[in-house]
Image (tube, rainbow, N blue to C red):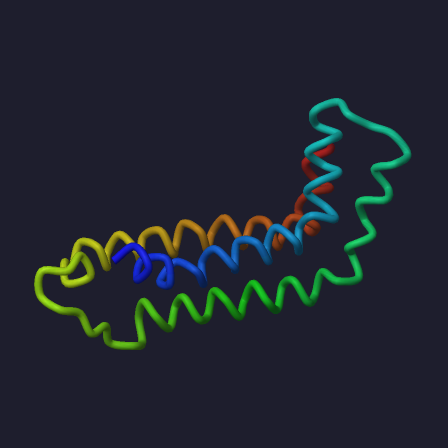
Length: 118
């Protein structure tokens, strides 16, 4: 049962990791600067910038796979299993949309982040 739940959430987890990778070049230095941590070495954190489009594509791919599992593919589940409960499916969809909004904010950070600094 735990293995079934893990396979359902794997697309969301992988999408989150890809979005973190896509925003690492921009969010990482911003967070460090907001915490008062600075130095010339922070410029090295932008080394991942050329890979940002790849991370964004991977994020969108995994979000698409999660959307497909939650909305397009009918779920086959035995009676009495947690997946047979409609509340479980609803909660999974709510978590999907919360994660999607957070990931969209991370991916879009390079466009709105500079305005936060003033």
